[in-house]
Image 1 (tube, rainbow, N blue to C red):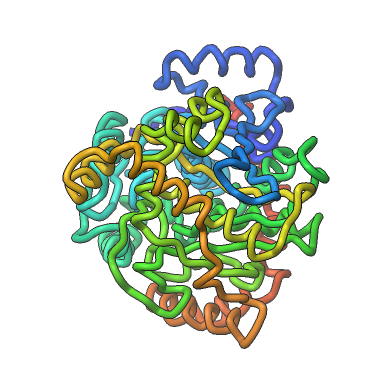
Image 2 (cartoon, rainbow, N blue to C red):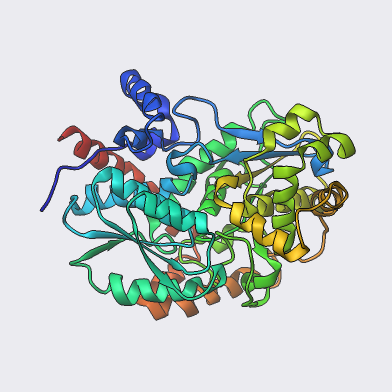
Length: 458
């Protein structure tokens, strides 16, 4: 039975929460005390429903570079991860453009974790049933959070590196039955691109105001769906010389050299060029060792005293970092450090990266680490890891994508995969031109009034 829509923000309001009426912003902030209050949909933004982007400027005693490493933090989004943004945007577009209503169909969220959590969360608040399709060997905290939000799980074999099986299950079981299911297909649908180009891209620029020269020299992010990299399109529209840097696990170097291995960095490295990745706007590709990301997470989480006593990080700063980092965030931080080194950036330059979530989803990953090393690491070991992972980030395993036909190679990889899932070769060829992406972005101007209209009709 069809039920009324539970309304939420437009793209413009997610980008700038000050566009919301003051009474609604106040009510949304109060709703943070009850995460299942639907008003939390209006807290889907980088700015805590205010004006300032949630960010951290990492201490140079930790990064070892002159450039400013600015970390945009997604932990204050409803459900604890910025992935809730694309999940909401995809569902809101379906309601506005295709007249989807709660009770019509079941919502499907293919994911390796955070997007699935976001899908379950938004569906619960909006009154839809949700099924999350994901690999069966992710962190236990991910499954627990999805079930907390009343989402069902459809698990496919493997880990992060086997997400292609999740994609195949999604298409065979759900996309093929549009009368029963609406699929929030993060790897291929444009709301994910639009959210990050419009909302995250602006937040990146806002995050560097008052830091260094106030500009973005580089933006580094590891692609899972590659949605976050769409922020680079917005950055380049204002700073054409900015470098957009894609990061990959060394153990699953698909974009780098076709590698197809297993890895431990949950949320990235999915053995594919996703459909929504504008590969011609990525400038550099770097590999990050998966074990470094887990060790780096452990240093931040349980080594604040080591960072203060042995690396000289101000004690209050080291303590403030605790709880904020998962493995994919550490991957992004290491990639940002490598970027600053590779480009020879100085104290006026800013490299921006993303923390998708926070440590609360990874205690089981820490326990697995302890099992591999025979117990919790000593202070000496934490010091060694801090110096090797962060200060010792190397300049190896970096590809300049602007040379030697690298963009064309990635574009062909995209075509080889996605024509298998029903997309025409001609459609994918259009993606080699920036005008394709600009046209998709411009659709926000048509979509936002429809989202607002739906809200006004309630």
